[in-house]
Length: 365
Picture 1: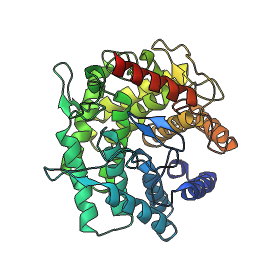
Picture 2: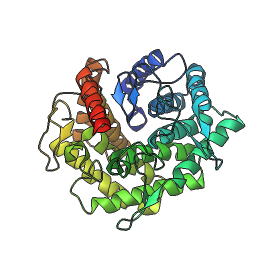
Picture 3: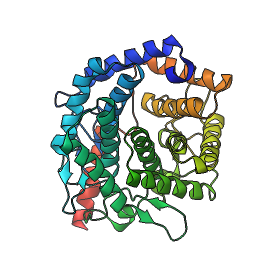
Picture 4: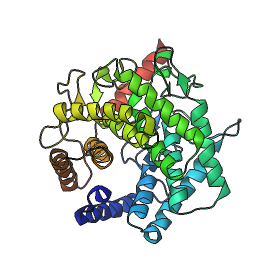
């Protein structure tokens, strides 16, 4: 927003959030989402995860925008060392990183590698880091992600399945799950990295993934969460908004498809504005028809993702007073909550017990 408006209030706000970010950085250099949750195994609160390396991206962007490299470098370097420590070289020479390496060293899902890769790409260029191994890891992660993209018989482009396809510990239905929202979060972070640290193979990944989502948009009024009946077939706003940010960032790299990408982004943003925004915050979960589902209370993390998408659109496509007012209200409510609050993805004691019962039942049948 500072880049879009040059308003000093956004510089002050960025500084405030930067201070929070470095304060919560883990002693090992990584970042944690700060609650227990189930990603197939249980992640324990306090353990750094690869998706939270979006924190490194934020540090790199803060350093770039405000020319604050000296202030930021020590924090960013710790996060880069975390990537180096937990990244693993694959038999084919590519690189990947576990989702929650303190839980398991196995690569169980693909998106953690995307977040690490995108963050690492921005870090290397922002801080002019010349370390051959980190550069190898960056390019190797792109190779790993490209190798694990799949083509559809019905839609253009390519897609990632959510789970790693070599897994044998989950049912076929779960193994075949495609998570369109995470795919567009991956596109967004790869696009930001590509703008700074270009790699032809990464550009192809971005284009193929966007083409797949654009083709999918012709079938639905709003992009679904997944290809199946997961999550009750509901729309989770924190994920849907990434369709906006991912397509907008990609459109800057592929000018010949800019109008196509931004058209779907605008359609998605309008749907969110019409159905999710209640004048105070964005309802976090909706039905396919736009009606509000449960839970419907304010959730900071959900609104933060939407804030990111709306500001991305405002800066790069089209800004207006109505959008500016929503962005302002969204930010001030997050700030009032000190950027923290209840999260419906967190694993409560009740959720843990239900999960244990289900696992025990499967074993005894």
